[in-house]
Image 1 (cartoon, rainbow, N blue to C red):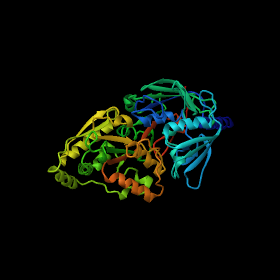
Image 2 (image 1 turned 90 degrees about the horizontal axis):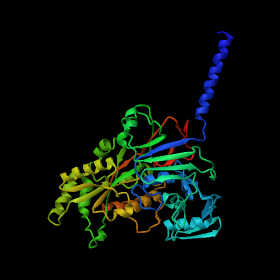
Image 3 (image 1 turned 30 degrees about the vertical axis):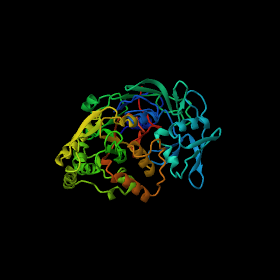
Image 4 (image 1 turned 45 degrees about the horizontal axis):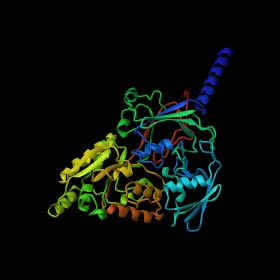
Length: 478
């Protein structure tokens, strides 16, 4: 080969190397567009919301907690740079880092106290000095730092006009409830400026065209349901799928201690019979497209290691036996089962549950309801039970169990989720007691999925399915 040709080949090779390096180097600027499955009507971390998990995805960029969990589920510092406790793990002190709210005011201990008192008013929270707060949990709370990483404990500054300010990497630019949220980069963020200039979330946007064309087009990322995966996962698309972390479960709204007060609770034998009619194998393999596993506990096996010790309650013969026992003793009215009207997967699950229950002589009447995911509104529903899809709030088992039991209404009113249980044996006993009355019927643990554009880089998804977007950037974004 002639020297001139050798030189041309070398230059071309060098250009390709430089181009590849440039395409993988994080870039500042541009706008990122993200599609969310559900619609959100309030961004207040403590506001009543039908889809709180979707709200939390957006809020994670606006508000911050004293502590945080990374993509591997490990505890990290947040607005608190350090913390310590007394020997009993009851009284904790958190030292705040230097940070500013989006209105330009400096975060102080008084701000953190005021925010936390909105979410955990029964605990004693005080400001020791300008940058240090003390939390007296009234009992041993060995996992309080992990607990404080939950979205409900985000630090938000609330003005007399009810305007909220956070300290996160992005701040509000435009908000249309139930439609879209536009965030702009916080140039003064203590952790360093994020890469995109702005992020736009579009809620409830159908992906029909994108799925047909097998490309996201202008979007950096989009949430997917399990029934949407099959059409694109064989086409070399960039899809991230979490561990089986979401819990589908039936929760009866009235406990046995509610007899004589309002709606009559469903007989425990009927609840047990219903649990035994559920065909979890068909549900996980057909409806949930093999992206789920049958659930016998509140927490998944991969997190606790003990879920397999709970009985599966999958026996139609046992269901019929229990139904026969109640036939001559009590009148069993139809069970009104509410599900999220905006979720087609929940509709299919509820209908399958009703079909299986009919074989044992139990009448389940499923119906769609807009406020199933709203804990406060749920209590006033004209239903005997609800079908819930509950995200996994933490990778620390005691915190995850406390959060789910609270969301299902199994913890005392106004509880700050302070579970004393710490050891696996204690958690197993506590979870077993919650299951033995059959007020909760676990159905399946399901994965979460997100579809990413080829131009999207450094998108991280935790084992629970939550998103870590602190290093996220989009190549060629405008």
